[in-house]
Image (cartoon, rainbow, N blue to C red; front, side, top):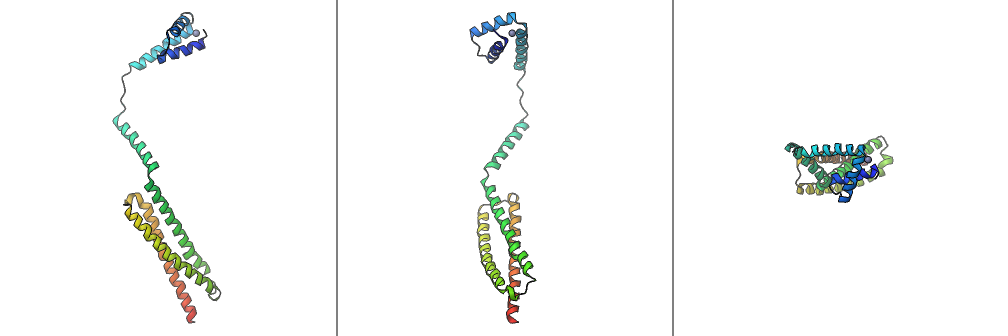
Length: 191
Ligand SMILES: [Zn+2]
């Protein structure tokens, strides 16, 4: 028998599923092959030493730490509530950005333009503004109610609250801008 085949028999021996015939082959080979028999002895002693080691209990703290880590990972994966809050937060952020562009940036850009030539545009902005104003407020109220129902804890939803505070500020800004547009229109009509 070749040494390579004997290696396989040794593995079987240490796994504890060696047959009588295989055991005979192994013993016979070890009697004439010094390399394999020495290797076998070294492995057997090493395994014996390992088996003799007392069972080491991991510190209780370690187990708790691992369990906590595993559970927090699970929560991160399974927490639909958090996912929804992030989606709602993102929607708030989009509204905020839209408000800033539509009602703060655009009026500033068109501020220097002659009112005569932009009357139609102002009218349109006013209409869009009215629609958005009502839509945004309705949406904010609806989402606000949902959030209250969802029993929000401030710590978990701090980012959401900040985003919505920003969104509401943007709505305020929008209303202020609309009032000024209306004033300009009124002044134009009077003059
Ligand atoms: Zn050998």
